[in-house]
Image (cartoon, rainbow, N blue to C red; front, side, top):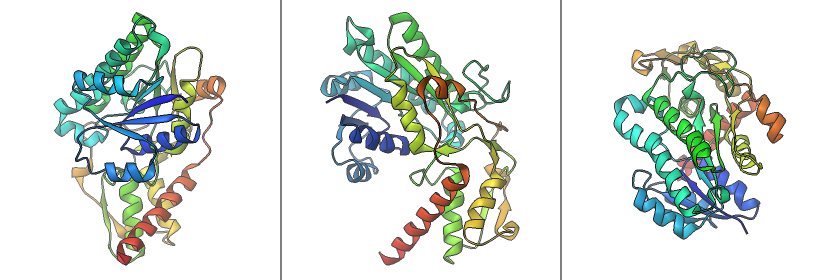
Length: 328
């Protein structure tokens, strides 16, 4: 039985990855920050077989202890402060966790591996936000990085540190440059879930409207359940490398609103949506669209859920959540 450690197991990716590894017969360990973490109960419900260990990405000593207990053959570093808008308000903390936390995990992995640096395979969750002010369309592994947020800058640090540890120490360390990926488990603070929750509540008469920022921003949106499969595939390769994971199709926030509202029978949503400048980013990322040719050719990976299926899945889930709340 293989052993894997997932940092960020309380997030949508962590839970989907944990389910995938459990199905594949892994012994799954998850790193959780703080014993009073409100997501622990949900993780225990979704992943009853997972063993949760408590540590902090900013504390190398705690990570060394966790690594010794888990003794993993594969490490998936998904832990981060991942809400981009929040990173301007907390740039220091974002840097410590999302940036330096990667260095701490790499160092803990290297120390446990000892004289055989490649014996523990390491995955780093890089992000399309690293491309920021995009220098080429579509974006691929060799595209110049130009981050436009403290979050993006921190992810660039972690990405290059992963490459550096691979090249300096011979570690089997791969990075997945994942474009936006969503699911019913996405946090309510993210724009996709904000929209699908509001649409569900409007359908049920619980809410009259929603307020948005820039409707013209374009993103390459995929399904988180597909993207964790790509993570696993990377660590099964004989050599470590970096891969863009994306659908290759871009949609605007307007498209997101079109699909979500259409699913509840509203084709003209103009009267339901208002604008507020506070939801604009200080430095916007206008267009992200990924070229996942390398992932297709090397990993045999392709997305299975398209944009319309993804958004309707999320609306249906939020409708059920809202109805369940009424029953409770």
